[in-house]
Image (tube, rainbow, N blue to C red; front, side, top):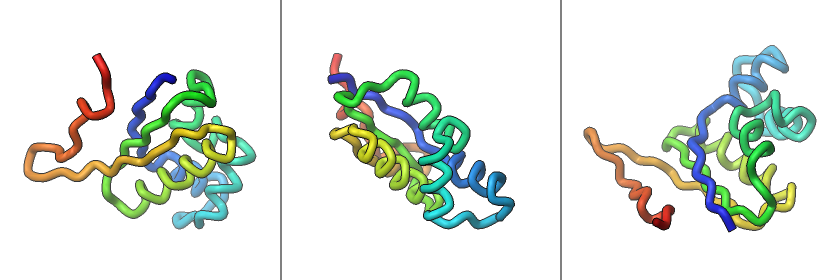
Length: 109
């Protein structure tokens, strides 16, 4: 099993807003767009669908903002429904110039 760490932004939120011509897309809108056109809906889905295998461990690294968390949760749901059994979200919390997350915990040498 390969572990794939990927930063997760809000491309799903922004792209869904463009698709549905709204500045505040709902979770249902994002879920539907991701299901129908994953490569267009999300930069993360576009990349992962090209390189990840269902047996891989996906780790979504996201900031601790409402929209980033929403996008990460919807991506986790999408990949879990797509047969990925090892999917998790790690929330990045920053404090004056240093991150609490230790990436070493997710990597093996």
